[in-house]
Every structure is written in C-alpha cells, then in structure tokens.
Length: 505
Image (cartoon, rainbow, N blue to C red):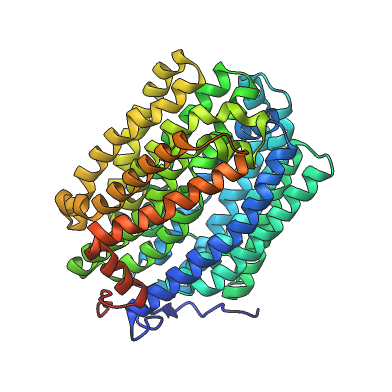
C-alpha cells in the first residue's frame, strides 16, 4: 500500500508541524482559508444569483425541505471524530485507521437510512417529490469518510493552503453544475446535483492533498476516548440541528412550498457571511486554539482579537443588508422575489447574535470541553422550536422575527457558560465588539436617510448610490472613533502581537 500509511507504533507528533513563528502560521492559514473561500464564493454566488433568477420559489422550497433530514443524518457522519484528531496531542496511525473504519460504517449506514426514511419525510411535508430528492442526495454520505479524514490531517498540521485550493476547485465545480443544470431546465434537480458534485470533488482533492489513502481498521479496541470526544461533538451538533432547523420543520408543515422558498431564500441572503465566511475561520481558530490550550492567556487574547476582527467585517454586511434590502433584492433576484424584502430586516438584525454564538464553540471545544457547546446547543434546541411555534401564528414574517427574539437570549446564556472557561470577561467581549456595532449603526442610519432623499432611480443605480454611501461612512466612523480597533486590525493583518504557540511536551 502506498501513501502516508504509517506503521502502528508511529504517532503524529504535535511538535513536528508547528512552525517557528506560530502567529505567522495562523495568519497564513486564515488568509488561505478565508481568502480562497471569499474568492470561491464570489464566483459561486454570481452563479447562485443567476440560478435564483432562473428557478422558482417552489424549487427552493422543495430543496429546503430535503435539507432537514440531510442535516439531521449528517450529525452522525463522524466529523466529530475528525475534530478529535485535531484536538489530541498525539494520534497514532492505528487510531487513524480505526477512525477511517468508523467513518465508512457510519456513512454507509446513513446513506441506507436516508433511502429508507425518504418516504416518511415526503409524507410529513405532503410533498411526494421530496422522497426522490432525498434518495439521490444519499450519495453525499459516500464521500464523507475520505474528506473528513484528509481534512483532519491537513488541519492538524495547519496546512490550510492545500485545503483552500481544493475547496476553491470544488466550489467552482458545484457552481458550474448548479448553473448548467438550471439553464438546462433541471429545475430543483440542479440544486440537488450541485452539492453532490462539490462533495465528490472535495473528497477526491483532499485525499490527494493529504495523501491520506490507507486501509481502514474495523478493530475498534482502544478507540474509546476518541469515540467519546466525537460523541460529545455529535450531541452538540444534534442540538444545533434542532435549534437551526426548527423553523423549516414548522414552516414546512404550516406553509406552502412557495412561502417556504421565500423564507429560505431570505435566510440564504442574510446567512451568507455566517455560512460561507465564519466556518472556515472557525476551522482555523479551532486548530490554533487547540495548539494554545495550555496557554490560557494567549488563547483568551486570540479569541478576543479574532472575534473583534470578524465582527468588523460582519457588521457592515448585516446592517447594510437591512438598509438596502429592497433595491438589493430587486436588482439581484428580480421582482418575483419581492416578498423577501420584509423578511430581511429581522433576519439581518438577528445575525450578529448568531455570529457571536457560533464563535464561542471552537474555543471551548479546543479546551477539551465539548460539553459546554452541547449544553448551549441544548438550550437552543429547547428555546427555538417554542419561539417558532408561537411566532408562526403571524405567518412567515413571524418566523423571521422569531430569530430576533430568541438569539439574543441564547447568546446571553451561552456567553455566561463559555466565557469563564475561555478566560474572557463579558465586559472585554463587549468592548471588543462595540466599535463595529456602533459604526455599522451609524452607517445604516446614514444609508436609510440618503435613500429617503434620493429621487426615483432604477434599482441598480439606487443600490450603487447607497453602497457607495455606506462603505466610506463605516470606515470613517472607525477611523474617527475606534482608532485602537483599527490599529489592532492592522497589526493583526501584519502578523504582529500574535500569540506564540506553547511548547508541547
């Protein structure tokens, strides 16, 4: 057998992959992981907006209904085992082979289970086509064992450059399949085959990049600690699923596919930053925090600085989206999606709370405390369905406003449990995020004022004027009233004052 299969006594030494300048290594990882993500998403979202223009709200509604079961089963796909590989000080080659065996068994069983359960989901939503869509989507599970294992090995050694290159190619292929399928008249099937193509490309590319081909082991003796850690991660993911998918479960049962498509497309727009930018940053953060887990002050400082940097980028997106909702939707998506506009305000205002909530988990998981994230997600799993059920009485707009009601409460609960473990006081976190929040508020107020003063303009021109107004105002506010934040960001980009990696015995 060729590749990186190692003899059983060989371990992956945590000292080996650490570069002399850990701060520079983290910065390079962030640049590659987030930079490639942004580049890929620029092309992917250009394709997405074209696809949205071609397809109908009903197509997106049907696709959204399949995602509930797909996400539920994906909680058991074994990515928690990959997290254990990253978090542990040492991982033997035998353990890697055991994890590969577990991944193959888990995902094979999940593919079969989804095929069997597909008719039940279709009956629940009273949409027979959902069953056919789910059966084809079961192909995704067959790619997971290869991508998860390779991802863990690359992340452990902080080799995010290779990951970034593979993810970029996979995103481009997925976008091409989606657009080509939409143009060819596939309808909702364009949305189904695009992620299958993307996942298959990613699995092949990561396996080659990590040279992680090896024979699986189905002898699981001695793998108990890894399984327990992965199990706790899976528990947190399950509660996170209930928390994040309760709206679709309720809306899919109460409302027609058209309204579900309107709502999920509004979510798609408002969650672009959280779904496309934050996850790769959290991947780098988890790997970096894991290397700093024995140096709590460095980890706490790194968490505060990374949170501030992310919020500086996130806040103008969220508040800007709320301020230019109408011309943005009409310009990018067309008049048939006008119903999205009133849903964007509550969803966009809720997203900063969700962003901060998601940034807590990598730090607590890296400290070997995945139970904290599980508890936070469990609270969300209890709170969100109740709020969505009550809010559904006011129609689909009520489902959107439920986000703004529930997520501030959930963030407060999670922060109380997580911040003491990370070593950050609530006042420190508030001071870190206050400058971008205030700057984005001033920006949104100015944009809405200018919008009221504008004469009647074509929507593309109106959108261009408002964006050209908001960007400079946001930057000017930071320059005038948050100079310390600006200086810190410049130093962060230059790689200065980055926490050093602790010595690992």
